[in-house]
Picture (spheres, one colour):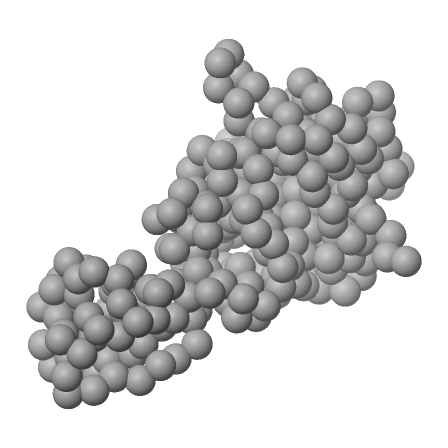
Length: 302
């Protein structure tokens, strides 16, 4: 049986009259990279803060890395790495000074050795004497990741860690995450990027504080019930605009010279396509982006 790094049931949290997390059940296996997706306000950040011990749930129970989420929050906070959306380290300190400060917070016995290892592992050696505030977005995120793993946590909780970072830096960041997962670290990461979601072993989609759908990327796309057709035409922007007005067409997205048209009712969708593009179209597999645009449009109801 697979060991679970996260196993919670009935997790709920309200702020005033607004229920942000609503009876959420979540299981994440040890060594898994689990992607957390959903629209802004769907409850992703609050759930991560509940799991990290930074917020107390109104209801629910369970464990995070073997500790009770209600009674052992101090132990959880000491043995996880939590990365917020916003860079939260001192910009007027060097990379080394920031890491040394973090080492002191976690009472690491040999801080110099620990810093040397994480600096080497994450390629930060050329930047150790640079002020954190002078780093690019990608290197700031790498510093934040270094600070998260300095104390060798069992679990990483990452809240949109690559927001605003360029494509190359994002890819390198995810390569690092997969290296860490190979070493047994569990990762729960929220993201809005579909290319990142596709790199997760499993995806969990939230809407209105509860899980709507979950599974591996391929199964989610195949089991979505969506039908996607691809049209190649010279007048693609005008065709896309017209397609969005047609009955049965839920989304029409331009990808270079191609138009992806998506719907969930084949007969109505095909009837609209016959009128829209009688010159021809072909059916293709729906993408993750097709699936999540559909979930956003339907409020997560599928």
